[in-house]
Length: 320
Image (cartoon, rainbow, N blue to C red; front, side, top):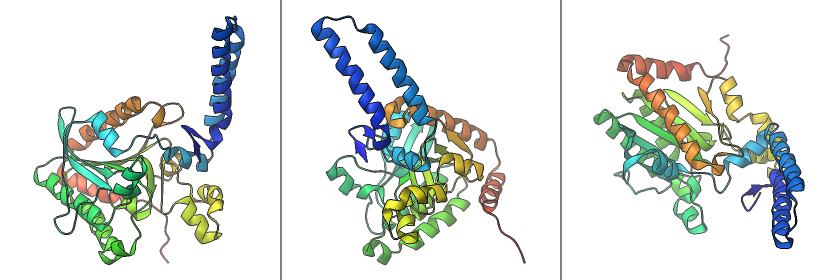
């Protein structure tokens, strides 16, 4: 739970920052010299921040990934790209506002950028369906992948979703099929694909736009077959067990890098991407640009072979 711009585990930081602010106001109001005391508290605050953020639990990282002020897909597009032209609709049913995409310039390179979009206030959250795409959202993404291939433009994907929308209407319109076709399509698309998990990467909702030649995760993002709450509800019939589920799932960037599921972790500013979105966007842009430079040097057949091999290597199995 967040208190203003602070998460629950950041409460000690919030209280100390308030104490420092109050002391500064008192010093000015009463014309007292309190610089020494304030300096001591600021030193204590710096140490406290370092202690808390050097020992984050997996559940705390999940909380950071959901921070209400964390930059979303359209924020990154605005900060990283120019000349973004959003494209709408799946040409079959509707336009899904939870999935956004279109052509843009990333530096001097034209790209097709696609990603899930969450909302900030109640109206926007409902309009964006909390970042949970319907089948038409995945079909729109697939249409944009083909469009990128047609014009020989690399694809940049930003993943941030609590999952594909599980409603009856979505199931009736073929949610599972839409995601499966996207996965198949992304293995065959003959242009480079770079994927960045910028926040939440839950289940098939993330995997439906998650196949790429290089897959990155932000430091405080997570990526898993199910959310910790969903896992807890299934295993213990108690969503309050989410912290235990998070430890069992191992969904953090460090976990997935160690398992070989992602290729690189992009470090976040202190306390997370929401504390300095401009710096975070510049880091993401740099990593995407370097990846596209590497991938652009490969022949198409080699690119596709490596993409398939990358995902075939995931997991452990035994033949009897």
